[in-house]
Every structure is written in structure tokens, then in C-alpha cells.
Image (cartoon, rainbow, N blue to C red):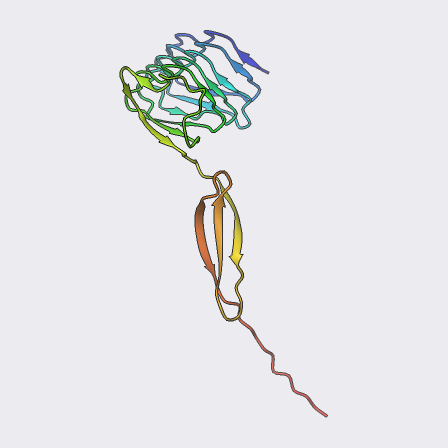
Length: 193
């Protein structure tokens, strides 16, 4: 199975529209998919082993509109998404501690959602440069993952209870419900001599 996609592997593959990257791939080289003008969607298989998006990896993929950065990525290289003008939203996972300058340059409609609450020190000064303007950036973003229901107040025969469902990532309350009072049923029992 494939473990590495070398530098410039699919450079200027203008007919490439969609690609699924298997979870056996550990490294994608620089400019591996750059200039793939028809590329619209990149999907990483579950349990991706990718930890870096190298310099220019998706540079000038003008139709790229769907991209989810794998959760174990720690570094995003220079111009890795440069000139991806159809990209409108991207979530930066909490493990990303390095973003090089101009990583998202000329992505005019992009909103960046960072799971980190504040800018990590490894984000270079022009990481969010867009030709003199910057993007809309949301800090502390969480793509919520529902956890199990937690009963925080047991129901009794005299009062209702309460339960909540929280996000396993950020602990935000995603749903809450009341629990009906417990009802008692009594059977009529006769005592005889």
C-alpha cells in the first residue's frame, strides 16, 4: 500500500476532480497536487497518519471547495492552499502549532476556524496574509462531538430529574432534557387470618 506521495506527484493533473487519500499514507510531498485546476474535493480516510501539509501541496487548486485537515496534522506549509479561490471554510485542528507565511494567500472567500483559543506562537506573522487583507478567523472553534448522556439530577417520586449531553472535545452542553418523576404502583394485597 502507498505510504508516501512524492513531491509534484500529481502536479498539473488537470483532469483530477476528486481524490481519497488512504490512511496508509504518512507523508505528502510539497506541491504534490499543485496546479490541479479541476480538483474539487480531497478526502482523507479515517485514522489518517498525515502530520504535515507541505509547502504548496494544494497551491492553485482553484476549484477546491471541500477540505478537512486531518486531526493529527501539526504543520501547514507556505502557500499550501494558496490561490484556492473556491475554498470558503477550513478548520484548523488543535494540534496544528505551525502555519507558514501565506498558507492561505488569495483564498478570497475563506473563513478560518481555529480550534485553538489563541494564535499559537508557531504561526508565522503572515500566516493569514491574503494580499494585504486578512481572513475572518474564529478562535476557539469546536466541531462538536456528542458524548454520552450524563444524569446530573436523579428523578425521584416528588421531583423531575435532568440529563445533559456534552461535547467530548470542549465540554460544551449540546443538549439537555428533563427526566420524568418516578411513579409508584401499588398492588392491593389482602391479609387474611
